[in-house]
Image (cartoon, rainbow, N blue to C red; front, side, top):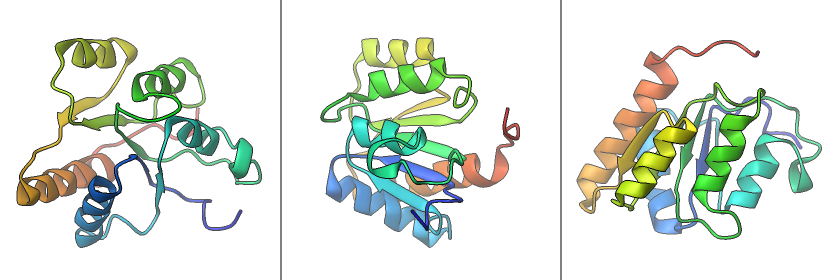
Length: 148
């Protein structure tokens, strides 16, 4: 599949409103050019590991994964567990971007190796600002190792 070769941000979000807001915020900072949005945990793992509908994708891991926890098919905790337990993807920064305030979700995410855990602000403007700051930091400022 063409167009997926140099994905910088993988947005894993089942809520179309939240996804559209995140994309809008990232686009304002010119960070959405190489963004792919997937809507569930299965699609996220298929994309990252070039399986299913993405089996012909040139394998290049995203620079950043923005991951919701409350996903259909496979939840975000299982996606995170899979990503952080695989040598090919364990160094890819994963930022949980979720509505869950639950302490057990926060603790488990960090135990599994999440790089950051952010609760989505309810306020529209705060959500836009937070996503743009996250995108700038993890895509531009933060340095990650080249392919392992």
